[in-house]
Amino acid sequence: MNILVCIKQVADTEARILLKSDKKSLEIENKYNMNFFDEFAVEEAIRIKSKIKDSQITVCTYGTKKAVEALRTAIAMGADRAFLLDNTGLDSDDPLIISKILANFAKQEGFDLIFCGRQAIDDENANIGAMIAELLGIPHVSAILKFDIIDEKKVRVESEIEGGKETLEVQLPALFTTQKGINEPRVPLITGVMKAMKASITVVDPSTFEGLSKELIDMTASKISVLTYETPKGRPAVKIVDGETPGEKVKSLIKILKEEAKAL
Amino acid sequence: MFKDIFVFIECKEGSIRKVSFELLSKAKEISEKSLSTVYAVIIGNDIVAAANQLKEFADKVIVVNNEKLKNYRWDIFTHVMEQLIKKYKPYAVFGASTITGKDIFPRLAAKFNGAIVSDAVGAVFDGESIKIKKPLFGGKIISWIVCKDDSTFFVTFRPNSFPVEKRSLNGELIDETVDVVGDPRISLISTDKSGSKKVDLQEADFIICGGRGMKGPENFQMLEEIAGVMEGRVGASRAVVDSKWRDYNDQIGKSGKTVSPKLYIGCGVSGALHHTMGMDTAKVIVAINKDPNALIFQYADYGIVDDIFTILPVLKEELIKIKQEV
Image (cartoon, rainbow over all chains, first blue to last red; front, side):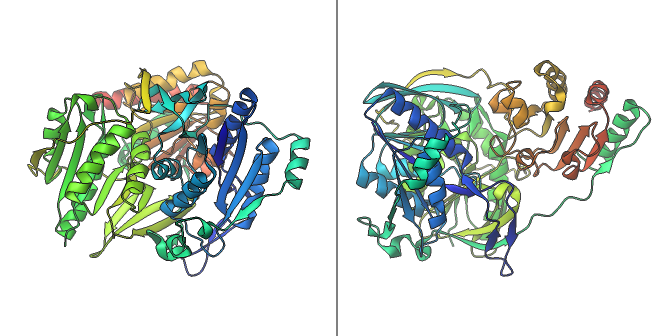
């Protein structure tokens, strides 16, 4: 089984994000991780490889040179090879462009199975997986909770739907996005970390892909433009509701919620 | 200027979801300024009654009623939408940032080589284009985005982002017959809709959320009772879900669901950043925690410092009284 896992390096939840003075760019504190939902994707690929021995796991990301760190984490977990689709000089956040780049990479390499995280925790977009699938003309199932191989051509998955779950059988090649609940991502062992530090990571210029010139994937090709960034309006300091007894406190709260906050 | 807007309508158990009315209200506000037409697009099975309900909110209601559309499948629904978009060529397509919206909209955007903005919380028309408001980094930053309109563009909005405003429009019903075919490479084996009667966490106006301070899964029954009184929903922090006290479906936070209810009450929730990133767009936040230094109080509008187990029974009684008054 030839498996591709598309990952993203994202700012840590705790990282400080500051607006630059032009309000058109951001300064992000240097704290980055592999995207939370992508860890489930890498883990699932590793579990498949442990069942189907001749499998190969490729991880790739579209990002800056720094994103190599996320690729090394995936190798430390158990991925076999890694590709950085270098965005130097391109720098677009447009999901359509990123999906085109990832889909072209997948097409060039040829995969039976593609995993992505359900969504990135920085932009919460949840677009890349389904867009790659559309561009490749293959089926996808979002937010899977269970994954079983039936044979080399077919898999059975369980996914979250509105108000429940459903089980589907899908012919390969296909793409699946993973979410919490499908597995418990492993913490890399020290031997894995050592291997990852030495691993060579192929850096690819996406504009060299067939059919993707620089003009088609740089900022000028972007379908979306950020006009401005702003910081959200902060809430005023909390009002602690006083009272001698729990009953008094609750009654005061209810009064405030009805009359002041108009929330009841 | 033709800036017609499609609103993709979602139904749950035969009823139109509240978020779809919210989107129609926002789309109509924009269309009044851009002198354009709002189309509600409803596709499914046995949806005539639901379609009639939409007439008051949209200028036109496109209905694709077909028994093969009984259950949502991205492949079939995407194919139906593709045909409608090709025929009507809308300027923009609005949808909800729900499981369904997140499934179908990216595929449509890729099909039409169009822009997509997901999980937005606001939109304004400035006379030329629609500016879209979208939070980033768990709400630490707000971005204002504009889409290139060289082809139809697609936007999904977080539920509870806009008020519902009925316009009494008496919109025209348009029955459309299109190809309804799915991808033969996918087959449905079984469906479990055991949670379908619950209010959707992202759509709930009232959420009462339990944290580690609830001490055990059995104590969530009290929260369920209060949510029942308020026709709302129980949420849970990550620690609670990781402890297997509650299902992952209930998890609010960075790795769970992002919610924007009218009223959120956190009970024994510590206020870890992971959790607050999923709920800080709630209109009103109340925290109940016996620890006066709990982080949650930094995010809350109102707080009660006390033992949740003495507060909750009284809270339930008071909320029952309010409901009886109404």
